[in-house]
Image 1 (cartoon, rainbow, N blue to C red):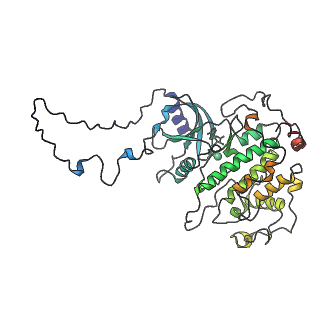
Image 2 (cartoon, rainbow, N blue to C red):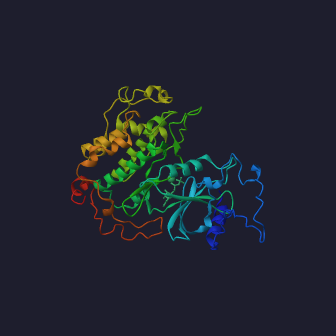
Image 3 (cartoon, rainbow, N blue to C red):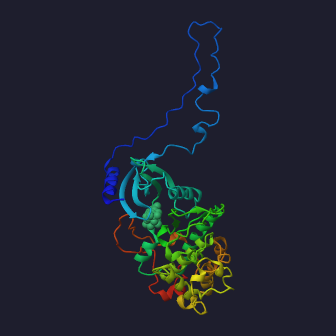
Length: 414
Ligand SMILES: Nc1ncnc2c1ncn2[C@@H]1O[C@H](COP(=O)(O)OP(=O)(O)O)[C@@H](O)[C@H]1O
Ligand SMILES: [Mg+2]
């Protein structure tokens, strides 16, 4: 999309403050009883039966009113554009106000300009996955609206003040352990919900996790999501999923069928990132990423990953000499239970990797410090809402200044 076309389309939506001319359904035709003509005799001729063909709908297609979910989309002009939040890989995201209710929402403009083959499957998957996976910790989809042309389609979502990536960059010190537990419980519960609805997210990372000022995270960006469990077509599932740093080793090694475990690997990377306040595997390429993984976990063995040697790219990789895992050195202040959860998420063998449902029951969450109630999280200025970087933390959120204090000092606040 060229810059000029972007600004033209945006300003058009922004400047036009007129009320939208919504496509309206014609009011249903009332079947009025035929009044007998005045002065008619008591013998009113009954109208002849209508031939079937003249009825409003065919025998085979039920009338539209039998499909309440199929309704014309509203116009984007029902919303007043406030500011642009971000231009992501698939679309631009705006903050906007619903002119009818005053609600503040986020509109993600789907990139359809270059589409030659109709509505793109990625956009359909995104809308479908968001609707299938409704959950307290999944960003709420409100509707899909259309602009002036067929290439202007927007997904309307609840507006959420932050994304975790920006928040982690702005925060002066890492989240407390009690906070990490709350965030992880929320993330696991959302991911478990998606998986139980047969949806793989396939792009879990901190910039796709939104967080509001009430200590709640919402999984967003289902642009790469797909159903799993369906028969997989010729060629298998694409390996072009999951942003590199969060990509599971089976995908890196060319597996063409994979499942919920790929999301769990990403959850492991996110867990480590919440602790360290920076991404765990900041690799420049796939080979570097694999060697970073081998270093942290120790290289895979026939014991830790029996299927390793059968993976398409395994033969092209020369494994380093055996070494023990480095989790303890890398996360010196994490409790034994915390290390165990991290190792269960970052496990080579996808069949043995912990599931979201199992992880929710992990002892890490029931040992001190306990998960902090979301209401006790501080509120932060929202960059997405154009708020200034004033006092970063509200007074209700005292911070432990030192990484070392994570496990010792947040217990009383929890
Ligand atoms: N509902 C929302 N509320 C607030 N910000 C959002 C919302 N959805 C997305 N964003 C912001 O826009 C960015 C890009 O959105 P995303 O859905 O991840 O698009 P992409 O597929 O282009 O990565 C996010 O990282 C986040 O900062
Ligand atoms: Mg994204």
